[in-house]
Amino acid sequence: MRQIRWPNNESIVVYVLPSQHPVHKAFSKDILHIFPYQLDRIWNKLTFSGLGVAPRIVKTQAELVHAVSTTRGSIGYVDVLDKEKQHVNVINITE
Image 1 (cartoon, rainbow, N blue to C red):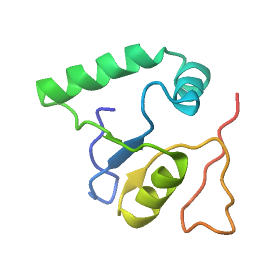
Image 2: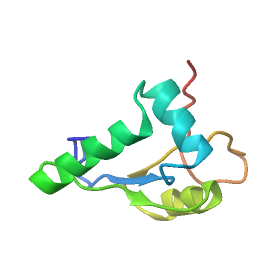
Image 3: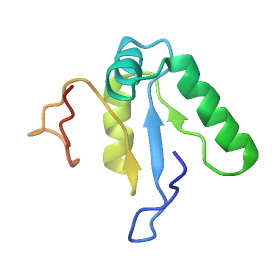
Image 4: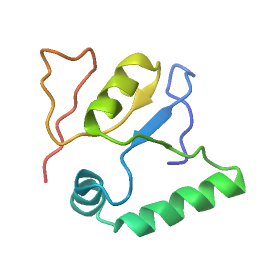
């Protein structure tokens, strides 16, 4: 959350789903091991202190995949992705 640039000095753009979205809840709890409200607090603290940049919130997983595929330096998460139809690099994260 504090890293705002990739090693190649390109800005990192983070896309997330709304806090109440089931995939966001699962990602927060299962992968990050925190509750969504705790993640929101961390983002807010970093953003308002000037130490980080707030994530961009999108409504759906399809919108998130489109945003990541069309924005240089971006990153996001979804629960399932058809890798053949998308132009994004995929990293599978499992618990």
